[in-house]
Amino acid sequence: MVYKNRTFETKIYSIRLMKQVVIIGGGAAGFFCAANLDENKYQIKILEQNKDVLQKVKISGGGRCNVTHACFDPQDLVKFYPRGEKELRSVFSKFQPGDTMEWFESRGVSLKIENDNRIFPESNQSQSIINALQTETKNKNVEVITQATVSQISKTEDQFLIETKSGNFMADYVVFTTGSAPKSLKLAESLGHKIVSLVPSLFTFNIKNPLLAEHPGTSFEWAEVSIPKLKLEESGPLLITHWGLSGPAVLKLSAWGARLLAGENYKFEILVNFISKSIQEAEEDFINFKENNPKKTIGQSKIYNVTNRFWNSLLAYSKIDSEKQISNISKKEMQILAGNLCEMKLQVDGKSTFKDEFVTAGGVDLKEINFKTMASKVVPNLFLAGEVLNIDAITGGFNFQACWSEAWLIAQELNMR
Image (cartoon, rainbow, N blue to C red; front, side, top):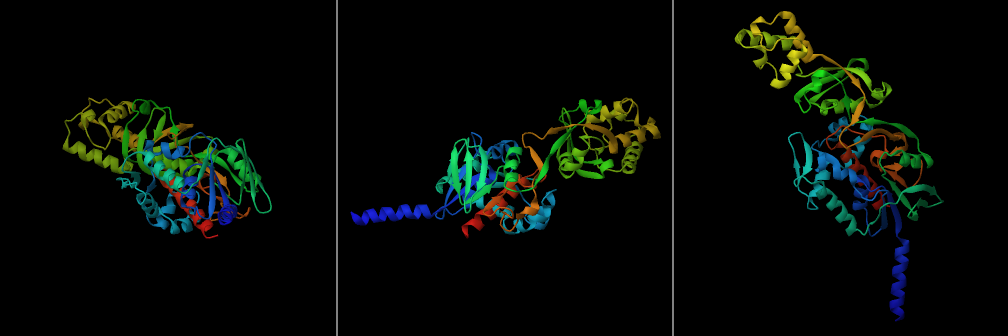
């Protein structure tokens, strides 16, 4: 009997010796960090302010979850990050998209690489990713506490006191993966971190124009969009929406120009090249087609890679009769058409969030983070990952990859302590 009591006392003592890790934020970075921590060394808690965890994972990629991107060279991968390129080189050299794929596939989630190199679960369901993360954390006895809004974090001599509406928690290590909500950034600021002000990234352009208004849903395989005043230019697929322009070309432009566009109050002029050809090339194509098809009407002429409906609307916009024979199109009319196709001037007046995948530029200053471990240089035993940092990427799975890689680094560092 005495022996059993002593054994019990020894177990209690060993539990008390285990360090406490509290992860603030139940998103991609928070869960991935917890899923990679050593449960024999740490007692792990995840505090999430909402009723549900992993909400961005659930809605990303239209509910399919764009897990990562098939770019396996860290030097190439960092080029997709308008902010954080330099800092992420070392991070991705330790954990990159290939490692992410291996991690999920080894836990029963089959992944697929699509034609544009985005990576999704074979199931086409974000729940597959959520299940893998939740199963792994459950196996590690991670305690997940929802509706636990953190109101204050205080640093004692060797621990943290975390105050929430659900009660207070003590932690030896705090992992801060809250996302970029202003209230969360104020907590980081209260601990001594410098915050780079937030501005939206990854947004679509609001444009009121009669030509666009007639064609929501029309897409262009490869277009060029530039902002001459700011010397910004991007290319890629383009989409006309009910409110203006979207698609990768616009989203990339919004990401790289996030701060400059905020400075313009989202009112600026853009030039759109719907066919990614110079005016001279467009005119040459027109002349060649005209020589070979002189009797065709201009409205029936398939000269450029645009839809027939858009082409006829462009003719009306350019004040050219669609029934006119192409042989009768004057040089001036040809030049007007080529100009509207290759250098269409449009006035942007505002922005719209891209679907539900809101991304911001700004957050904790990167100079205050040790990117070998993701540890704070300001507060000992504090680690940060995900959108709370002044890091963001274009659409395509890159923002998630930064979360996976940063969270993995934190777990490896703690596991070695």
